[in-house]
Image 1 (cartoon, one colour):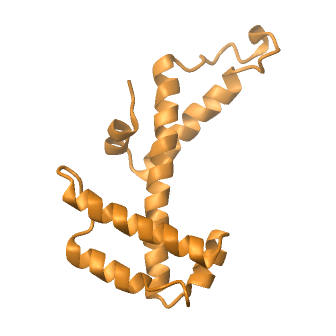
Image 2 (tube, one colour):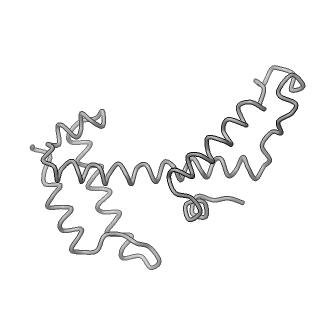
Amino acid sequence: MANPDEVERQYTLLSAAARFDALRTRDALTSPPDDEDESDYFDDMAPLTREEALELLALGEVIARKAAYGRQLSVRSARRAGASWSQIGAALGTSKQAAWETHNRWIDEQAKQQRDAGHWGLDDEAIDAARTLAGEPDD
C-alpha cells in the first residue's frame, strides 16, 4: 500500500505531479457521477485499482508537502532579497503576521527534524541564520 513517506522517496515534485495528474484524469474519466449508469463511461479505460486510488491519495499528500516546503524556501529567498513581511503576506494572500508565523513554524520543524534520527533538517547554524533573516513581522 502506498503511503506518503514511500511515495516521497520515489518522486520529485514534478514527477509526483505528473503521476497525480495521470491518475486523477483517468479517475475523472472513468468515474461516473453517483446517480448515473456506469456502463455509459469510457469502457476502453479501466477505473483505478484500489492500489492506484491509494497512490493518488498519497501523491496528493506528497505534492502538498513538497509545495509547502518549497513555499517556505521561497519566503526565505524573498526575505533575503529584501521583501517585507507585508509584501510576503500579500504574495501569499494572507497577513504579514500569518506569513511570519507560518515561516517560523517551518523553521521550528526544520530544527526538530535535524534532532530526530533519520531526518534531514537545518543544523543549528542554519536555524540561527533563518531566524535572523526572518526577523519580526514589523517590516
